Image 1 (spheres, rainbow, N blue to C red):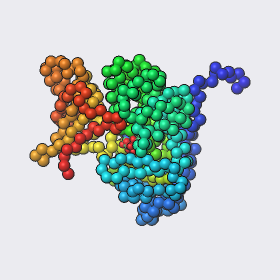
Image 2 (image 1 turned 30 degrees about the horizontal axis):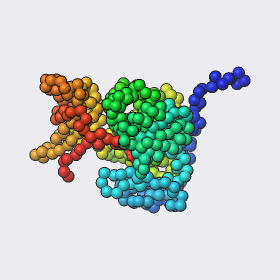
Image 3 (image 1 turned 135 degrees about the vertical axis):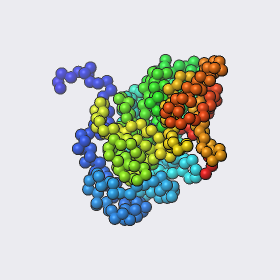
Image 4 (image 1 turned 90 degrees about the vertical axis):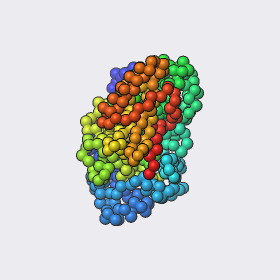
Length: 445
Ligand code: DLL
């Protein structure tokens, strides 16, 4: 193009690392099949548990000749990681493992995950693609408030931000007042943290007179816990930033499995590395594309710890239509819940995200809430504690009663049953610096 001038070139050229997001589908499927065959052979040769399970089913790596053949392979469960703790599923000798992370279980031992040098390179690349999909580029100043340490959030986002060419501030989680000072003084343009921690930052910023809507930050890269569209609306309206949803899990790599793009409608799965299936969580049957079920992921390139058909327990569905952004890799809907988080009250299945959606519809309620489950006389009880705004709190008793009524009605409408609502003063519920703890289950057994 001899006439091309510097002015004609995009200021932030298409990031080369994002190229696999746009592969023609036929090429992508061939790449996936090649990688699948290779990773299955690797796991079969090096991971005794996987080989035994394949043998029990009578399948060998050479039987995998199409992508659909993945359905003949055995699942891997979180308990497999616990049962083989700490290193039982590794497929590389320790001399090739250059990093370990761990995910703290609520009970007992954590699960341990491993990376070779090439795994770390893939991780950085998928994080570059995540940031690029969220509109970030060289020159951005990224405040990384995901926790550093054994949690994958901090270091995963860190190396991705550096590989993007952005400036990363490795502040980690917590120390909220300092976060706000840094955000303002360093001219931060994007922040990475859990959505619940960002809510806390928003609240504290107002108290400190550092309104985020007046600052340079334009994007939030939020993940590691479920959140709702209603929560996104709140965050975007109050701060003017774009709030993007990113998804990942330690067992697969950490953050960098899937990310929203500018369309903010579904998360693109980096499926040249992480092959998705949606199954019926009860029967294990593969569901037709578009149906909601449990996300199962296979790592197509992970060397140190290949995960074949890993049961994530996260509930979602794949979006079948093409995305306006032009990426060809498939999208999944935001994770509505983990199947483990669902609870049953008086025969009704309830997901915490339904509670959040209902609460945020009601003016006067804050996005700070907690669900408490208890058992009285053999019956399960559910109470939702929700903070009210300072205006409502200083209002008349009638005003509070009115809000109480509206919240009870909104919850009944969404959940299909009447639950107890407890209005609490602003700032009484514990704020999270990482993943929020929304449910306190006091039922024994
Ligand atoms: O949370 C990795 C991560 C770090 C993802 C930073 C995004 C950003 P784990 O601690 O192993 O890893 O927790 C994984 O968190 O199975 C989901 O249940 C949940 N989760 C992660 N991202 C989202 C999200 C990291 N965007 C578990 N929406 C997963 C809903 C999410 N749930």
